[in-house]
Image: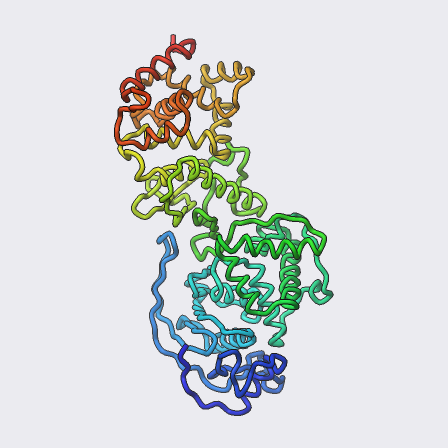
Length: 546
């Protein structure tokens, strides 16, 4: 970062040295780890130099230049253009919306610079955008930029957000919070929240539920975990950083923080955290799922190895009453349920990729969970942007199969797209299967109840939906698996028939082929359909309408 040359008084330089650290042993002639002393905004180290209203005295006025910021949140449904005023220090670039008072600007710059100046290594490029609460009431980290309304600048929570902008937007919030607390104490900032009693006593605080040990963003939110577990997460995050720095350098800690934001590095980070927990008498397995702030539109965002998920603040699972795995406020509360869903989704995505065996799939996939994805209000996969929009979690596996299969099958063939996705989603995905199963159990259709009465026989539980689809095909008189007007059921029945006869891999290969003739089976598509029709008639004729 290029530094503007500005004359400073000796008093200002001495004040910064006092604030951070004569104990660092890394400052010589105003230089700390390759960083020059701040141009302005240096925080004075004595009470006599602090204004009575709590505003820290400044040595020089910040110099602003006009700028324009444009930003769209990931879905594109919320965007803004703001006229801002930019200023630069040695530690960060600051963008203030014009409505932000000078007092608020000074407080933000002073607290941020003072804490960042205590980092014992080179500070990364960080940008902080402060907007008025009336125009932006969310928190968002995009790349190295933090978007935030006015908040308490002298808190570990705020500084943790700044650190995430510097070291990785998907990084573990607990590591950022623990290091933020460390910097606050190193800088001599007064913040009761940043110094939990447990850290003062050097004691570990057990969580009431094991998932809190993940230290993800949601573990610090009382909507998702109990208040005492938020305090436990804060305490243990601070204690971990304190103990880690007792035997490692700050560079190693910050490398760990950065690694926690990647799918590749998280496993190693979790190993280090798990060792810390074992030393404190806790045996736990930490999540591989990463979380991020959601801005104005989204409650939060989630990343796994295969996709990024964005959960709309207003999203409501419309089928929650018909699905025993989903609660009314699902994904908006109870971290354990949130964790279980996304860990399960990651496993399912891996399973489908392995099942279909394609080695060129693009994992740069976005999934928007919203009730406003339409119009019309449907779930769908958008090929052009490699994006899934879903209004119900029961549709996720179906649409994900579309994303994996795109480019490998005839997109105009309904049985190869919709029938295939329906069969394999209900066969392997618990969330969609349980919704379907619940719906069948509540059905008043005589032929479904007749089958349910007969289901006491010993069958593979995962075949019952396939059996019911075959029955529906017979009852409704469906004979063409390639008609979209029949709601995908005949296509799924046809795929299941082929799988039962030839096996999954053979059917996948046939679905992905350009030819309707299968040389290995020595049968054409028309012949296969005729065999399916004959099978349905022979096996399920007792369900025929009288």
